[in-house]
Image (cartoon, rainbow, N blue to C red; front, top):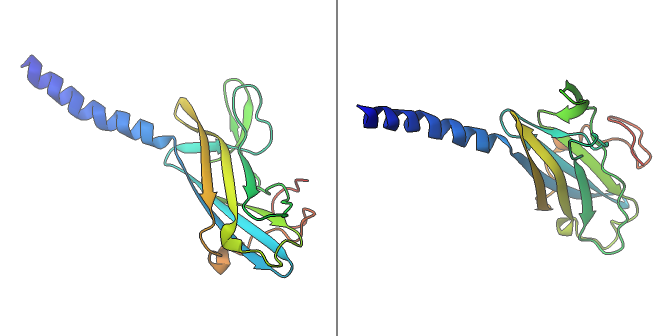
Length: 170
């Protein structure tokens, strides 16, 4: 009887533990295209079920901000990624700015399109993804997956100076 109870306990516990471990994840996709003289990128970030990622601004001593760095095209000087407005999440130690659902962050390399291959653009995502009471650091290298659908670009801020959707970051 004890062995049967132990088997039942593990049969219930293992999937719950696996779900908790899988919850700390973020899916990231990079899209790039030439737009006039500029290269523009969109990075789609989707936290896993029950997860969140922190805002790109300093979240304090107990969390790691999400950041994106771009490369892969010689001579391109990239703007800082523009993130949408975050959700406010009160916590026991601080009030954090987080993303719990799919977001798209944008960046631009003014004047870099001439002779450049948008497919060569790369990005590095760093930060922290949290779910429940556990946070894990994340570092992912991304390569461009084409230009992306037209709807992906609908929320892109106009110009490199921070006009348009989201908060200006320079």
